[in-house]
Image (cartoon, rainbow, N blue to C red):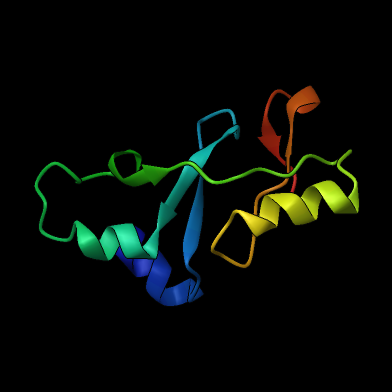
Length: 88
């Protein structure tokens, strides 16, 4: 359950992966709270938001630019050469 996981982890975003462990997006705590009680938002995929992504080969400057446009404190590191799997 997404709400329970947010309560346990105390984070702003939960990263979502598919059955092959490929990163598909994130669920934001804000979005979950905004859509609470919304019958169309029954599963995590109904609440997905697109965040920026970091790649393992990015420079520090490139990563800082990605964070500059993101309101959270973390971004997933996704390796496109590893079939889009999240690495951190």
